[in-house]
Length: 347
Ligand SMILES: Cc1cc2nc3c(=O)[nH]c(=O)nc-3n(C[C@H](O)[C@H](O)[C@H](O)COP(=O)(O)O)c2cc1C
Image (tube, rainbow, N blue to C red):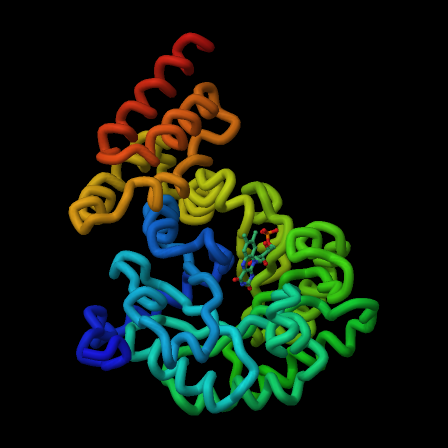
């Protein structure tokens, strides 16, 4: 059977979408990150932050249409509320991809207007679309017409030397007019020449005030802020001005911050890193039984004890052992034990 046939879809759309939970998840989300926020990583983040909105890595619309859907779109039910991030700039293809994703049970379709890589620019999508508000509006309108789940946009403030707030706000307004339900603002420009994608996440200066102003002037538009948010205190401060915060690198390198942030927002009791890690066991064992190698999951766990006594030992045991044939849950227990021992010695 061809991989593109719907009959293979093992994750049908839930019959009743949990709208309230989806709406509430705007307050805290984890950014789409290529090679990082794969399905295993997202299950871990879901355990850390039960109410957060999770985003997939970017997938090009044509890949969704023609590629291996189980590999590109498959997810675990626990990942809801979950958004698929699409790349592309052809309204017809994006609408078809959005329809497929909605049928797979995603809760939101997000269009990438922020990626600055050369490959993406050559394909005329990502951040260079900030200069084509009309085309993006056509893409958004086509997706909105194709699905009954929210369509959203993740964008920058502008590209290269763009320095006019009105141009940025005009871009957003065009997308809202086309039916975008929410905007995620990575609050810096993308410089399309001369910077690597990594430098483009660090060098162009952050201007949170533009996102604040956007929200202030458009109180009905849900706005999530992204870029450089790394602590509970910083996130709480931003939430005085916008509806949501989206964490990227901090969520990956220091994932406990997701847990601390959600606990701060909901008033739930903080659980320990160890308690949270142990919750991964059924998922890890199920995937190992499917034949997956432990390293594909354990690489996402390495930051859990970031800046904690024993944190380096935890990383080391996992990263050295997970590649060995037969590595299983026992390695994670071993890493935990070494971490406890080191922590006790420090105490
Ligand atoms: C490894 C990596 C991959 C990324 N991939 C994507 C992507 O697929 N789509 C996207 O919109 N942004 C992507 N980004 C950008 C993040 O979503 C986010 O906008 C950026 O890292 C700034 O947020 P932060 O300072 O919280 O990390 C990526 C970032 C990283 C570090």
